[in-house]
Image 1 (cartoon, one colour):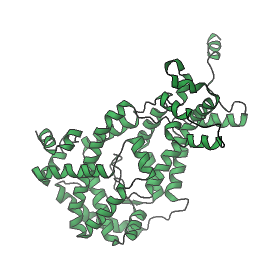
Image 2 (cartoon, rainbow, N blue to C red; image 1 turned 90 degrees about the vertical axis):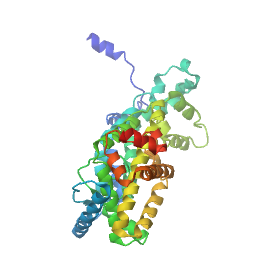
Image 3 (cartoon, rainbow, N blue to C red; image 1 turned 180 degrees about the horizontal axis):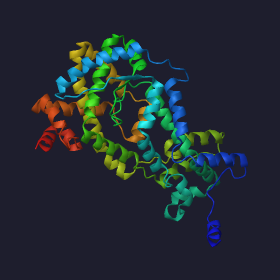
Image 4 (cartoon, helix red, strand yellow; image 1 turned 45 degrees about the vertical axis):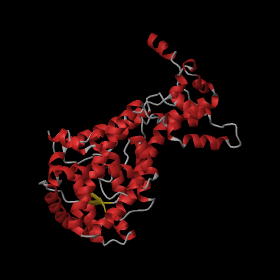
Amino acid sequence: MADDAAGSDQPEPFNPFSAFPMFGDIAKALQGQGPLNWDAARQFALLGASQGQSEPNVDPTVRIAYADLARIAGMHINDVTGADLEFPEPRVITRSQWAHETLDAYRPLFTDLATSLGQGTGVTGLLDADPADDPALDAAADPMFQMLAGLSQMMAPAMLGMSVGSMVGALAQRVFGLHDLPIPRDHSEVVLVGSTIDQFAADWSIPLDQMRLWVLAHELVGYRVFALDHVVADLRNLVRSYAGGFRPDPSAIADKLGALDAGGDNPFEAVQQAFGDPEVLLGAVRSPEQEALQPRLDAAVAAVVGYTDWMVDAVAVRLVGGEALTIAEAVRRRRVESSSEDVFVERLLGIRVGEDQVRRGKAFVQGVVDRVGEAELNRLIELPGSVPTPADLEAPGLWIARVGG
């Protein structure tokens, strides 16, 4: 009984819907979803991937065509890279399947992200903060601020689920396979999004078989890169450390909410704008640890992208001749154009694949090849510790000396 009495002295968490029983039940349901609402993530991912339309199953003749082309591409990749891999037969899927499987594949990563954003040090943590420690925290005593903080606490899992799902759904509209983003995932398959590949070929007036061969070259080179356990381990650790490294700054969040004009002509619009900012809703403020980690993650991503592009260019020229350069330019132009999902990936996962990253990666690989040749490049990346540091990326000679001994 004493324990019960002691427990009753604990303050109840702030609930802006406490006077409305129906909304209170909704609030409890939202709070019971954990750091990320996976139901919301799946629904928004599938909606974004399919655009609300039913997708036909992949035609069996398309699967057969890709299987035949993959055998040709695989032989050339092994020849150019010096590897001796047995590539699995490609699995051709719909955009909705890609979205569903990607959510499952990256679930540990998104869970790390959601957990780091839900540590109680963001918007909701301000309710427990002492304004004496920081004058900016005086805003926490404002009733409007308390209402927003309470809403944030209850809605953040659902909103993060919607954000993650929307990002994955939007990516499903444009990716060709598993290696458009250099984030390691299950390495047992080669997966292609057939309708997106065919649509890209039509949009750019590229012969279909040539486009399919180019994409196969890209995906099989990606498969070869992520067959290297040390590359996968280093890159996965960097990405997960970044995603799990958010340490929201209460005073920064207070400044944002303190500037909210709830007394203006349209207070509801002001509230809507506040919740449209992920830094307010999710407390997504980069930590010093993430700032320190970003150059290492940038270097690893740039090197993977640079190596992949180099090898794809070498293989694709064999497969499709002069058309390879046209396809590569079209794909890279699309890749460096920022979209809303790219911004989300960059801000919350730390993955940057913009024009600067592509240029740095290409310059690094070119520098290595100029010094030791393509065959030695392929040998060196197979050695433990071959993922470049920021210093390596700017000085390929240092990387050769460090990795090659």
